[in-house]
Structure formats: structure tokens, C-alpha cells
Image (cartoon, rainbow over the protein chains, first blue to last red):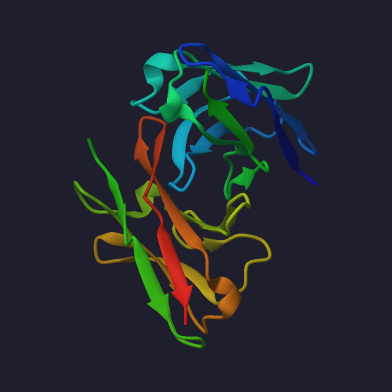
Length: 116
Length: 110
């Protein structure tokens, strides 16, 4: 059974870089031929697609976040990661990782708060 | 910049039928937008209901169906039940690898 688990600091200071990792179990990042993505949800607001990555390293990002986002894959650990630079309070959100195959499969999400 | 639109809120009576829509501020939604629908209750991760416009995700009751209605994607819930009261989110593929969510619809069953 596929499971995705987000991990990383729950508190990040303004202007610093937010870093999250998604650990995948029950599927291989390299063999599923799926894109793996990140979605976020600010408190009380809707979902926002951040971007996605293929195991080969091919990436697509939201135009509004593209300048601040990087993603990577660690095939040996069956993980993929998100980095968001120069964060502000507006980046405070629950961050979800997901497998973007037919019928997205979601992690449980992790709250990241940007505050000094 | 193209925005994905959803009704902010909707209400339906128990046992009734409701259709939520997902549109574009520029252009029409087609099957090429691979519309997907997600149900979310407070504090929980979204649950996939519909993908690729009209494919039902595993375990989703057939009371939920997806379609294209006019120039929008649509999610229809028949025989609404109290536990259908949730936020419903749609997402559309806009090409060049980019997906965009709508603002979500808060559905009340009363």
C-alpha cells in the first residue's frame, strides 16, 4: 500500500529556506513512471500546486513560485524533496507531498510556520 | 494569468443532487485539462474522488460523478448525505506541466 510521509522543520525564519522531504513506501519513485509533487494549503485557504519532479530530474513548477523553488530526488532513499527560498509569512501552510499518477495519492501533510 | 474558478459555497438538502463546477477565467475546460476533484474535511488531507474528468478513484461511491458541462468541469453528487459536507477542490492541467487548483467549494448539507 502506497504511503507518503512529509518531514522537515515546522518553523522557519523569514528570508530563510524551507526544506521538506517526502519519504515514499509501497512504491518505487523510479519504477512507477509517475511524477511526484508538492501542494500547499495556507491556514483557512485553498490548495496551491507548487510543482512536481520525475525521477530523472525533470521538473515543472508553478509560475508564481518558480523563482524560489527547487526539487530533487534521492533514489537510494526513495525520497523526493522541496526547497523554497526567501520565505515570508505568506509561505506558512500545510505542505503535502503526492504521487501525481491517475488519481493523486497524498501524504498526511505537515504544517510549516514562517516566523521569527 | 488564467485562474481556475469554483463556487465559494453551495448547499444541498439531504438526499438531493448538487453539481459543483470548475471553470477557467480564459477559455473552456475540456478533457485535455484532466480535471480532478478532491474532498477535504477539516484537519485532513484531501481525498481523491475523480480524476481524468470522469474516472472515479478506488473506493469512491458511484454517487460521485465527473463530467464536462458546457465549458466547465463538473462534479455531481447524488443522494447527498450528511457526511458529504466538506470542502471540494478541483485542479486542472493547463499545459506545460502546470496544474492549477480552484479556490474550493464549501458544501453544506442541510
